Length: 153
Image: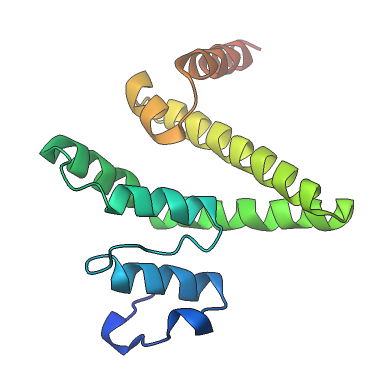
């Protein structure tokens, strides 16, 4: 198992010097607790994270659910990295931004389907698969039916 640890007390880059995605996240994490306005760096993922961070009257259940959703296993992180690489490769092949967006969407969808198939193979409950794959229940049931059909052949 591989883990990367960051000491946020040593991250001292000012906003004007932030260049990489890693820098953006470290800046966000370092300043999340004491900033009135956090920059979203024109990144929708960071904007969503800021929205979650700034919820000041969230219920205990919501906070616990969000914390559980934000913790990824090494396998999930590896899968996400693979999906990003696939998306970038598709974008390069198409040669423009639209290709990157399309590749990200396709790669993410493919990763969700693969995750659902793995969870179905492990006999996980449908509700759990919906929660973690973010696929609709109808899609999970469709995948389950296709697995059952494959098993009879």
